Image (cartoon, rainbow over all chains, first blue to last red; front, side, top):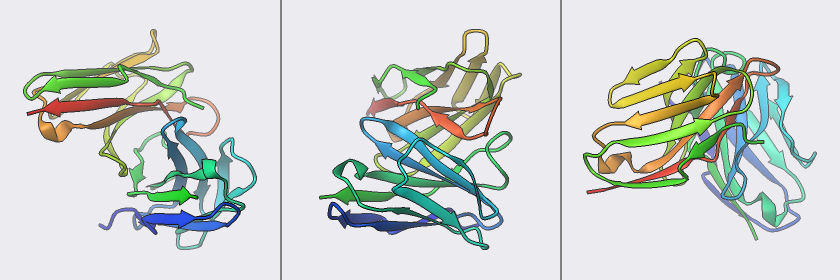
Length: 115
Length: 112
């Protein structure tokens, strides 16, 4: 079974631009969660999607948005990029909603650098 | 916001030694999970321990959970250089949405 695939692996963007990151979950997994990882704040939850619906959202500004498609693939978008958005963005998939009975399967992440 | 706090922040040991990492959390949990992350890459799941369990083993890994103290520990026995990585605990709450809330991690360096 293929793992979670995140594209692109690396991105360099300029302040003020927008960016779209993609995540393809493990086949059969219907839930996708996104996390931002920075040296200062650690791993912060962004949002979770299940069956194309956003179930939960972390404490991030409205510049961060996402969506999930009918094939469970997910995208997240960050508009009006700021230097502080530089981070490793991780996507995790699971078979069902949340993690009450299962672990998260993570992709390799997208390293975003804002200059 | 961080739920778990790992201790120590960094740990340096020799191959063959045991490594113990601790995690404390604040709220009632459904389960607690440990993950490993090699430098700048994705996280790999190690063990999930439920709130009604006290200890779990997986190969060279042993995890304990003390819900009365809201703490967990991860023991890696007979460490190898390949165990060099960051280790994170993550909690899943009993209330609200069942997302993972991570601590800041312990960076483990195992020297040959």
